[in-house]
Length: 207
Image 1 (cartoon, helix red, strand yellow):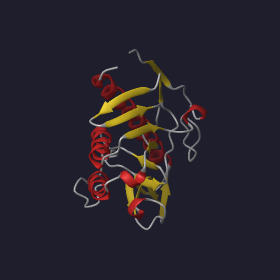
Image 2: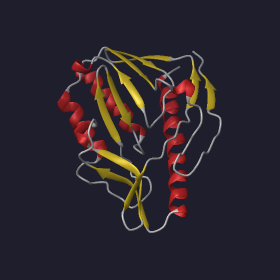
Image 3: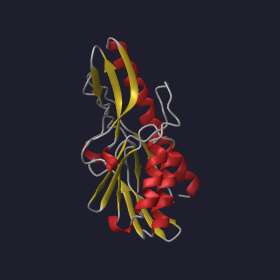
Image 4: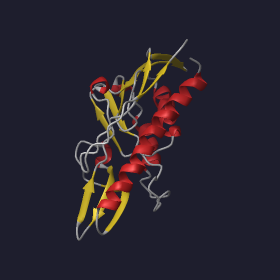
């Protein structure tokens, strides 16, 4: 698989999530009363990077009602993809756009480079704020032992590739990308309004 194929795969994974996000947010808006907005930023949220998250949907029927849109759908592919990026060896397994695990020695991460990436793609300064459903922002980051977990939200695929560049510049030599329990979670479910179930797309990867 060449890099053009990998880029198209990442684009497809992102688009699958965003399509579901837009549809689910629309249904929440139709079923709710009062005002609503998507991708509202909350601070002082423990365990998340900079204690910040962007909540998927917030209705306001007299008081704010934050809600999360959980999409367990994914693009299935096999075998896993091995790729090289500079001096970094990368293994890519199936993953969900809203919960990608990047596994590597966390102490190798350049904190300043990562903070700059986060500030830009979370849009801390509000430079890309919009009333549109899709705001082109990541929703959260978590730094755990040996793992960085990103909810890429509605961010463009450039956010993914930019992060890989940051890890490469940090001196990370070996990186595994995937969503750990994806094999057990095949369907989209929006618990707030019921279940939308469908089978995952499947493509074959030839080398």
